[in-house]
Length: 219
Image (cartoon, rainbow, N blue to C red; front, side, top):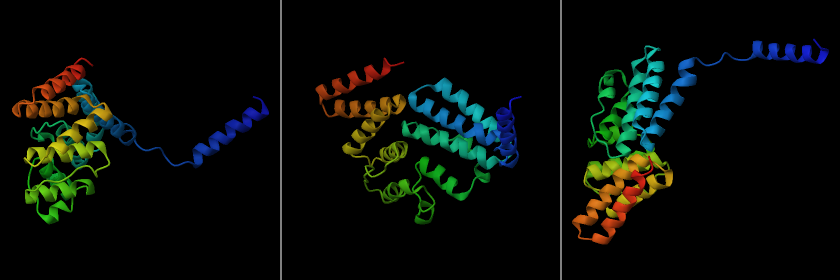
């Protein structure tokens, strides 16, 4: 071995010995799998999302910590709410008793519950104003919410409560469009199209239906 190569090998070995241990596989691979599952769900790839979610969930389950699995289930349900899918979050409910109070409050918020002030304070900051509006049964703006998915979740819950004004519906569709999120975009465009049809705005409804057809062709 050449002297410089020997010095390089020695340096690498010393660096390896002095470095911190790598995180376990469930940390290295679990979160990326869950992030991929959510990205695929928003993109409208249901099969891919299910596959990645199951992989991430299995990695978390290896720890024997139900709270981690509950959090993963809650993440998936939140992404579905962004697409106006309000089906029960059964995966979380299975482990609710093991989840911390903030996540229990968030699950109830996603389910459409009107929370009291103490539980609203446990929610992510981006959702607290909307949660307060839902509790008071008053409209609220979501335009100040910077994160796109959080904005869609807030808009969806206002819509579910019957408190979403036309500007909120349009902003939700625009947000999904900007992100290229196929699944929520289709859901929000359909809401806008139905609203236009009920109002007798035939031209606008047709324009929205053409957009829906375009998105549908993107598979």
